[in-house]
Length: 257
Image (cartoon, one colour):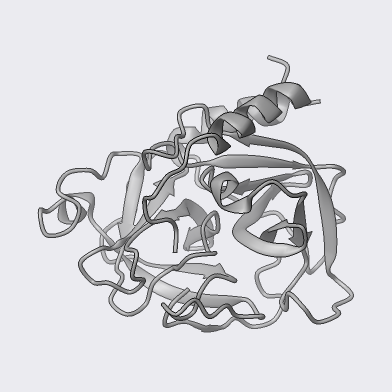
């Protein structure tokens, strides 16, 4: 299968044509991450402004969330790698141009399903101690409830919309799908391709979308959505599980020029 620039552009335009009002991947209650200790982190930017997170899965590919295309607008996309501070001068930082934006074909502004986006850089990233690929889970197994996993990002740190300049991180316990599907939470809408993490005053928040949910050093999920009020204990954070999409990811990476 050949993936052309025009094909990817059509997918992007189709995604942007609908206007979704649903809450989106939302770090709240976290703290500054140690500088450059998460060298896989990417900032997806529109005209130089942070929109979403993502992470490097190959030297020319970043994995993020499809709904980030709705949030970005109609400017020029770029991917910032090697950053801790978004504004300060750092020798490791470099903004890469974007060659292709490929949302999963099952994604839609109206649902939380298949919320993944593959971003091809204009050129391979220069790998170093500050820019590295993150391994993702390829075995389709559930992360046990209670497992403590980590999310990092440059998203909102307060529900007032305050954005950080430095990368934030927070540790969150996983909630079982059956628990997350209880009526008091999501009432059966969490599918086998999704997973949930606790959101009691600590949560991923708007602008963290597309970042990795990391358990035992492996990316298990991608920040997708949650409550409109970050840190709402009745609305756990929802993450797209990566293992069900390994075949799709592999096919895109192997067929793109």
